[in-house]
Image (cartoon, rainbow, N blue to C red; front, side):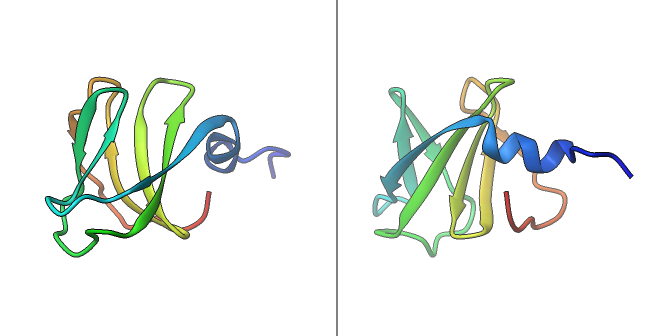
Length: 84
């Protein structure tokens, strides 16, 4: 069993910023509007994470709402994730 689980480390070694989801279900980060795929999160406080590889992710509590590459393009989420 490895001493360090890379998926858990990625959630710790990142920048984290708080944002409020706008009425259009977007949050802005670094001048880019990032769309959350499900239209049920407007006015919710979320956590934005910028990872070491430049990817961005949007979290509400332990649930990842969306993931984007460094340019803000969405990356499809294969399975819902909790934690990190």
